Length: 185
Image (cartoon, rainbow, N blue to C red; front, side, top):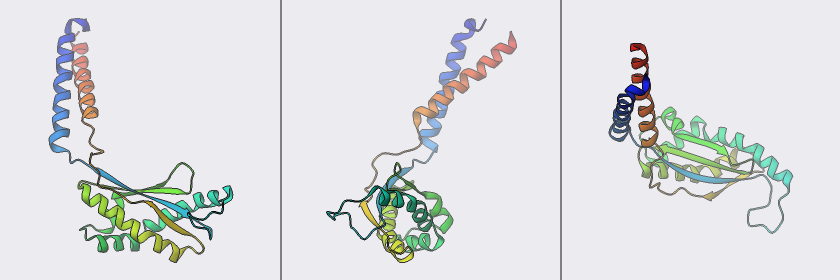
């Protein structure tokens, strides 16, 4: 019985898909991400040192990442980032824009800033990169953070996914007309 209404089901799905695609395209603000990469150094050796770094030191560095992320997200550091970058956010707003996590159980961690403005995302990530190494060395004895990569201006958005919105609309539209058709049978 549903095969008799397949045209209506598909057409409704296409219409819903087009509507959600249009919504995402014209009403959802695009977001951009800029990343800065850091290395956790918990020894007296530097990255450029000829001395080999042991797996124990790498393990200890990976364990310190959570501590460093907490220090990064402290109110005092967020307010310092706000004042140095010149953005117009409060502490809570900025904290929601920043994500930091370890890179695959290594001594590296990545700070990601998400913003509607790609230049602002880069500026904030690089401001963090300029502040964090000094703050870490002041707080945690005998360890430091080195900047591996500074952020660059992102050229493509990370959200919204137009295809995802269109697919959800297509499935939603098909489900709605499917339920209506099923109940009419």
